[in-house]
Image 1 (cartoon, rainbow, N blue to C red):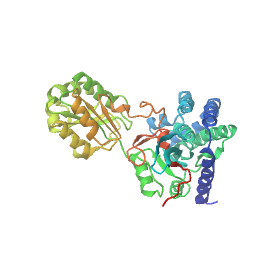
Image 2: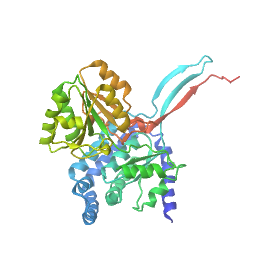
Image 3: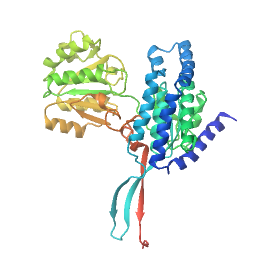
Image 4: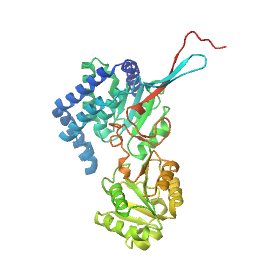
Length: 418
């Protein structure tokens, strides 16, 4: 068959499976998730054998050590995948939840019920653990999933999917509810993105280039975030020790992730005291500082920031620092350069904190804590399938509830409309 027909067959099988998965009770889904977890641990040697093929190919291609690290299915990673599936099994099932009922004057009783989206397509890079994480979340939320991982992890992804699909079959669930596109051809993604009659939602996970490619070529709705240009604003009424800890953690703890801080905004009234102390901590950690002219008055070693630094996602130990004129200056900067991902304020002033919460437009707005907390597990969702910076239909970390929608349910007693 042609590539187009191959991808169509995968999508058709997924759509058929989605219908049966949507009606499964929680017990059956949870049993399947536990079987998946057990299967991954029992198949560790086979998974690592397939993973070694990807690692060897990656080394030949000259992949960076950080990329190879993300690609590796170590004992710890496999245990993490299994534990993650068990955690999803322990989460409340959102499917079938009725969110409110009300009675109309004509006697009709109206409510809304949470239902699965249907078939979810996930296009992702590098990390084979995403295969298990995404499959578990989609199954628990009553959806079928079509996974298209990067070519660098194809053997690993197919091996993981084989274990997961077998577990589904063992639990009496259609194994086609979890499928990995087996080809590495880029055209497979383009064919997948045409199938709006079979796939209900596309979630791309990876770099900005991948996400823009998917968004520009998809006939299917796409949930996305292009980048995480996250800010911490140190207000004039901040506790300085707290601000130092938060700004340090947000930048240094794990700089290569989307919820790491990229730009530090500092009120002009606190800058003379705060910035020299902050610079000392950053310099000790090896952070390169790119500052505005005002910042460089207090940090002599700072590089002069360029215009493009303000909206840039560094994803490494580089921070842009700007001194701003109060709350309005910080809000204007975030509005112009932010990416709707995560913004944090450090302040002891309640009114300023509440204003920040109300006025700053972002998927997560944080008071007196690190931007690194915008993460599904950290926020109590149990797990996430990604972070959306679009507002339809989800905004922020996407857990089980965000993989569902709601339909109206209406109870009548013979009413007819006049």
